[in-house]
Image (cartoon, rainbow, N blue to C red):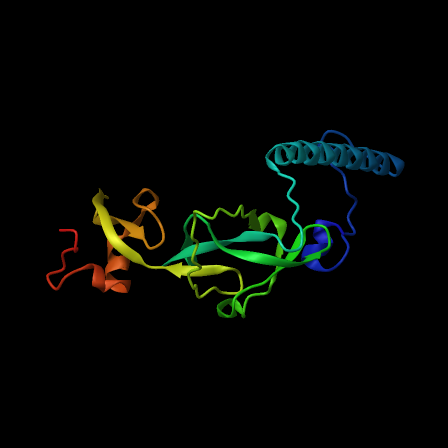
Amino acid sequence: MAPYEALYGRRCRSPICWDDVGERKLLGPEIVQLTVEKVHLIRDRLRAAQSRQKSYADNRRRSLEFQVGDHVFLRVAPTKGVIRFGVRGKLSPRFIGPFEILERIGEVAYRLALPPSLSRVHDVFHVSMLKKFIPNPDHVIQFSDFELSNDLTYEERPIKIVDFKEQTLRRRVISYIKVQWSNHSEREATWELESEIKERYPYLYDTSGKSLED
């Protein structure tokens, strides 16, 4: 449907014309002809843009295919417990597992054998969320239990304050701290508002209000 109809729930009764205002007056068949030409032009440009974006995506896309009985890692998204503007901040994704593939669902989805701790999570995943596991007898991998939500996210907790800085504005000074999160290295530490971290995670500070790093 037309955008007007989607917004207002009824068809637009005024004639559609993309001609410049005041350039000339169009009547009858001329309006229809110009409208058809503009629609064709828009569709051609949309197809060209979609084709260009598809070519960019195809260069980065890998063709992955697994067999029943293979073991794969599952990608999950750790989130910071700090909510800013109503959105919970995310950290770089990580992989958990490995899990055995029980069944192939269609062309791009697989059913995994999840442990009881992940019983709340739907066991069918898109291939883009999986990573092949190559067994190595020298490596011992232990699965860590996570309290995963239905969207495969879990909350991380800060373990250390790495750095401190202040941003001076016209009327106030804002304090920031660089926090290292659990299951992430110091390179992945993020800058957070000190007031939010102090309120939500007071264990990072001693009774005097100074950080444990100090």
